[in-house]
Length: 138
Image (cartoon, rainbow, N blue to C red; front, side):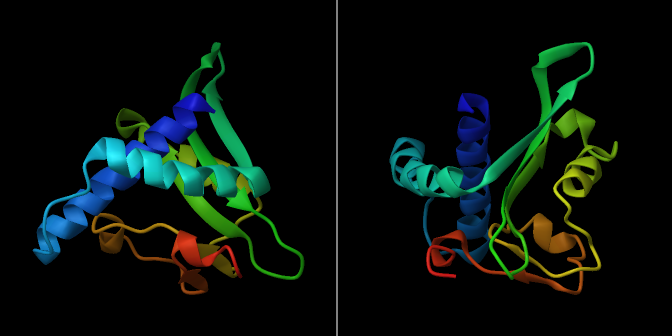
């Protein structure tokens, strides 16, 4: 979990940095401050979500990627984050994690993180973006 939480925070911080740069809304939050504040949200999310981890078949300590999903009664799954190591992207790892989580591209899903980079990828039609901080009450 230390790897998941650390890389999740670092990645979302870089997304924030890119968004602020592109929008010209000022500098990013310093990483130590961001990690402290975002860490509180991560704890809340992790307490109610499942974390699926893809590992190397030959080395269970080698994490290839992970997915954080929350299931709620009578509502679509809430996909909080999915990440695959950069040099392993486009090898089907994210697709396998989504499949294992029961998340399908043609079914409803709420996703809670986005970035300028993700904006270049076509989001499935039935998926809806709801910022993670709003999912406390959804």
